[in-house]
Image (cartoon, rainbow, N blue to C red; front, side, top):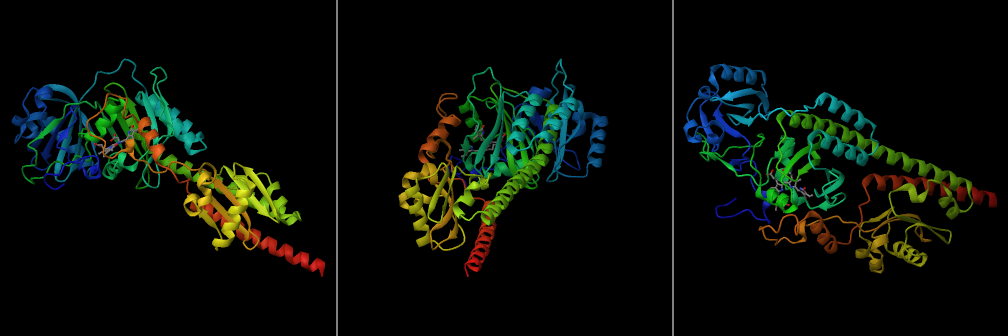
Length: 515
Ligand code: BLA
């Protein structure tokens, strides 16, 4: 950002969160010259972990800290890991007689970056992760739908990680988020966030980009005291340390304050991606500080990668099931039209039929003077008026909108039923149509509903809770239904072509009979 400009709620997509200048306090970080092994930068909490002030470490060789034996072990691990950036677990080590620490390292930008995480005492009931993973994977395979799958994901991740609440956020086309699954502790009186929506700005683009590089992100305590890097800039390159691949990277205040406002103290976030696109996140919350040891994070990372592979599979499965159902209705409708002399009757007698053809709350068939209503629809008079308007004003093979009232003012009062409409003309001249209706849904979100929201936080967990901001948003956003997806429109066009062909052949046959 230009000098003097500060990060606030209006520009937080520009916060350079990969170079925060500090780390979280639950470990120690050193940036080391990768060839000379001279320590160039250190987090300023070495006194706490090693009993030595951080500035005394600067300019020293890593050998002073690790001893020559551990240093050569480190070198051999790094030699066998030719890939840059990829953090590797190196070993458990004593450093200057303190520890033991888990040592995690990676090469980036000419530097060897080392993170030292105090090894937690073994928990008395050490879980067998192979057993945990085995069970999780077996369950995942059985899931049929994306939702069912994500529900299992929340349950399995909670079992493995032990967080109070686990959610799956799915990103929408506009990068807003939707909580599609949730599992939480039952005895804490937590309110559910299931099915709430959040704006794209809640997880800005640079934060989403980092999740593609680093799939597991732990915030051990939202109220941590930052450990600043000294010196602030690399003495050779004069650049701040790029922490994209570190696990201790300091967090943005925008995020820590959000958590504090929800009453949350710690989080763990796992990326779900489809190829090189972020599909969603597994977001875990804990209501007291929480850190999980390296091996549990690794188990979660393995699970996140499996989830990423499987979610693509479930999405494809769901899409193909949808298409199969559309085809089934398509065939049924065609056969009925071939059989039945009366078009309107033919179109509504199939099961599954017009109403089941696409996801909708209601449908209508207007043919040969009759009007059939299926599910939640406007009244017959309103449907007839809409069809008359369509036949007057809209040419083309298909009419599709997710905001009818904007185009057709008489629908202003119909938002709860017919905010979205897809209309397939059978005969435009006769105002014969098949129509599908969708109610208005929430599509765009502004967190807390008010961009001028002060950065000062309210009382813990009350005023700025996600549900309250969602409720505020819900009042202020209106006018869209769910969009008619490309596959739905294509399937409907195929149906139109087939129906008009069938009707043409039928009328040909009829006129031959009458001759
Ligand atoms: C990060 N914001 C995030 C993340 C989540 C959310 C899941 C990623 C978590 C992580 O880095 O571990 C949002 N979390 C939520 C929401 C809920 C939740 C919506 O639990 C609801 C239940 N965030 C804002 C606003 C800004 C913002 C208004 O809400 C900026 C104006 C910024 N969010 C922001 C930034 C990050 C973030 C910068 C990255 C944090 C980091 O990696 O340091």
